Length: 144
Image 1: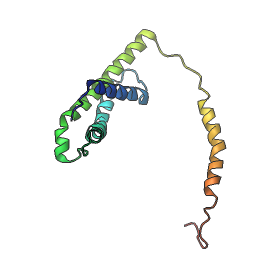
Image 2: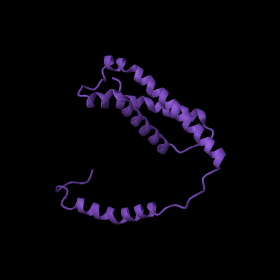
Image 3: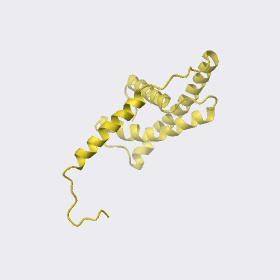
Image 4: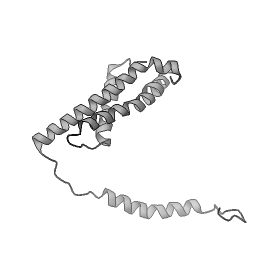
């Protein structure tokens, strides 16, 4: 099954590319790793998107039979090549930006981590005490 809309393909490509850029921080001059990681991640993305999600969205059954996956094999090659190109191009552009603009200035850590730790420190005991009330073990229960 191929995408009937080129716009949908571009949107999915942008989302995958942005997800890759956010999930994997840049490591200068690691071209092999930056190419192989997204190429390898193209395999589970193909399985999730092309084999399961697109058929379900079009009202068909998932294509996880041998015949269905064999029919979708060209899309697997496309996902792997897209991942390899994405990694290579993003690494090259990141290295170009590093060379032309210099390293990014270090920013001080934001209050988000402190706020999260404070919130969990306050909320976790409250949540645990509320969920544990009324859940008394049966008599004779030793805990093992």
